[in-house]
Length: 80
Image (cartoon, rainbow, N blue to C red; front, side, top):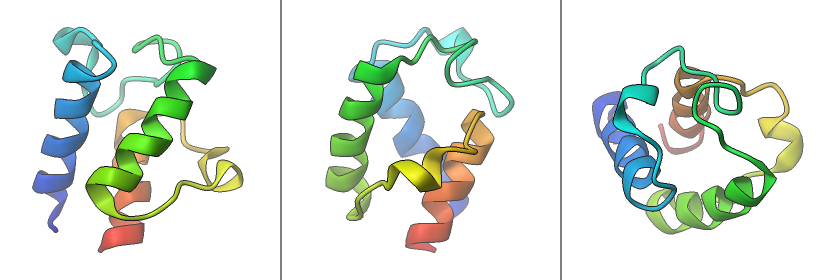
């Protein structure tokens, strides 16, 4: 799976499952501050990522993930 496919899938679930406004989804958008993702959303993200990308997110690995770009980097490192 290439970077473009990862970004497309991530954007799709942010729009559809978490109902994030499209104008808030851009590479340097902060997950919490710009997108409004909270701790309950992270639970959903764990399930969605496992379903779409086939791996489990580990909380300690997500500790330094702050932006959309970093989130896609993280996924790419696991599926790349």
